[in-house]
Length: 308
Image (cartoon, rainbow, N blue to C red; front, side, top):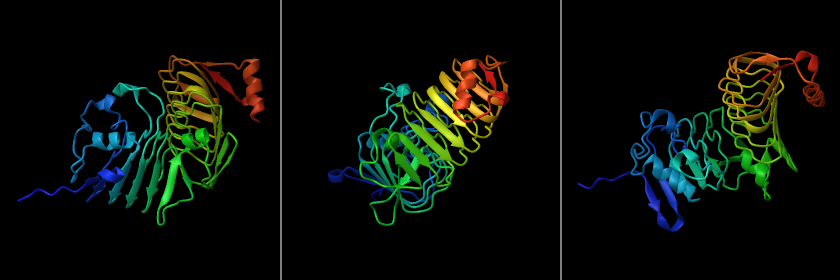
């Protein structure tokens, strides 16, 4: 008896198709669920996606080659994580590169597109929040919602496309659709401005090199994690581990920056009403320049302390 695999590749159109009987996590996850932390215990790169004849690695490589991935069925968590990031851990450039197109005939669970920097996603079913570093556009495919990376849109422009629930004016993007997001502004490397009207969740501004992300609302854990330049402004409170492993740049919190502030921080500056730092980060008074910076943002510097 012949073994029939779900999943096929249409060579002429460079389409790889997966069929899922139940949701699978980490499909198209360029980090393979942070492989460097678990070394294969949580996800084997060459493991076949259940019920299909393609591995997690083959799907990622297919998208790296700017091809099309089509999925029939419901998708799990961390779908397309870091899509478009050429991660140094795997011996490549560490830069943002182009990625392919993904179509899902089904639902998608939370954290779709966290830290995503390129590529296009079309979803036919329901999408669970928080989503990742994504903004919605008017779809050119009937029955599908369309999403692209915030970092991609603000870096390369709309090219004639229309945003839904957001406004791009020059190098300033205002997002006001009410969706909760992780990793807003991930890997941003130009002098641009991203404004979010409402709350955000994990890792706002992660691995930013330039630019400004401002959130008019509260933020989740790991805000400004691995920040490598630029400025993150939270006009509200942060949950724990803000500025964890910060490399450089500035985090400004017009509220409580939370516990374990600045854990494993290498450099950079944190200005906040209050926070509970952990060594090597410690509290000090503001300089004149820091007071002026806070004033320019429309905040009251008398309420702030510095953590460095």
